[in-house]
View: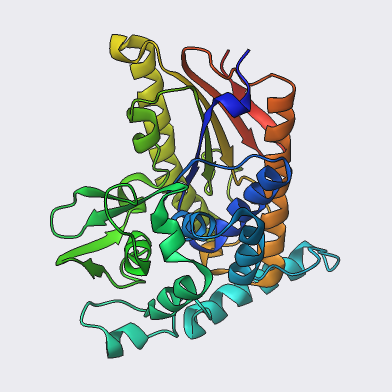
Length: 342
């Protein structure tokens, strides 16, 4: 029987801007369960969370995540759904006008300060990363760290990897440079935009690279494929955003499952893929990725912690097939196991 200690543990973190607090909650559950990743792959918000994890000692990571996301102490929603919808919509509008401290400056600042056209200047994110991440530690490579971006001119997917070259704050900013909101970032003469435009859940590096031992790949997605029938234009806008990015994840996972089933070169590889998705969307609003309020972050963080704890339960029960040849998928969303493949 293969144990977690016998596996290479990869943590793959998707993009989703303010929804990234869910990933922090998942990590908190993993940390409390003694599960630490050997390799972190991220794009956009996932790249930011990944940098904080890879660039700090395990005992400091949760404090740094709290400092970045600033969740409210309590997630109580005693005022009811109508009030909460109004509150969240107001938070989105305020952020779109005034920006978000530590991430991006107010509306119009990039037009005034940057050559590349964009609505917001992300220089504050660079300052936050420099403050919260020890880039010398990150680049020392105790944890492998890979960031995905897309070359603006050619459309090529590019991976920045601390095993190949030094990673700096601008590499992480490039991974989250979603146009037209955020300006493209130039690194070593090449201009990059958000890696989520190509693969919002960057599984390819982990699933495609040969490994010397079984792999437990914990992939944390921020936008759900399934959802309820939408009632308003606002809900429909939010649902369209979900589908745009969640369909990428579905296609990627389906393609890799097909390859592992039919490619003899992959026959001996053993990968357990745990796909966690932030699907607790009932209270979210259109523009949810711009709602950084402490109350909303706390709700997402708690949802991630709940789903991460469920994953740990499944691992302890032996319900996830570690070490078995092939690619085996377990889906977890909204506090439930969604899909398992024996």
